[in-house]
Image (cartoon, rainbow over all chains, first blue to last red; front, side, top):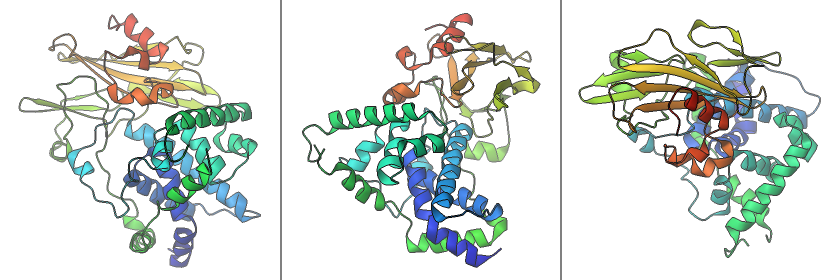
Length: 160
Length: 206
């Protein structure tokens, strides 16, 4: 194994992958698994891209697919954490109650994923549509509804 | 929303690996043999309140009482039953724009048999005296879901079902994700129409 490449990938993409995993799955420990699984795939299946932007988009797409597969395999829609799972410590604690991030995370998945891609990663609607494999108008609708829901959630708060 | 997403970006930036975690990750990636983290028993989806989740020791013991069509497993320990979806696999595969039901050794093209309100219901023939196992599939190629339903013959009504669901679209609807924590019979509005229709066909309607 090329440790230099592993170091490069970790340095360049580990935090991004963690954030994608956290956004999609809502759990830092799960996100860490996603992070590692995708990095393994990047190591096993290296690809050349004309620019770093396309490479980053590909990495995000891999991570999104990994999250979807993770959910299917874990069957974790209605979930009950094991006690030992709940007791796992994290060096980065969950965001404090009431942070904007936590409120975004409280949105349904289809809304928080578009919020992440549009307002964190800065993708345009058509780029998000391509990345998620859904029609662009659907992305626009989800963004609109996500912002409406957030606006309601934030009424009266410091973020309003 | 004043500068709201700037704040969101700043807070999400705090979700990151520590330097120690990154170093450990590099080591793990470099040592390919130990590249994958240990499998954790994390989640299960339950309706039956009497079921509990605590199966690491039982998995280690390797004793399986019953296996559902999707690979979910029911164990017994004393007075407890433990339901694990750890080894479960989706019973549906999307290939070339078609949906195939592949559980229990089947290979059925169900693309034209299902819809948003129309389920494909499969009953497992090899039934156990204590359980009856069904798989319900519904939706579209782009937005399908499935539910593995385990009916307990020895339980009181209201405490006789276990359901695990999954797919591109979960049986318990994404649009009602805020209600996902109350996945019980008292909240049928959370479930997809094809699931409710399927349950009705089975005489398990809510």
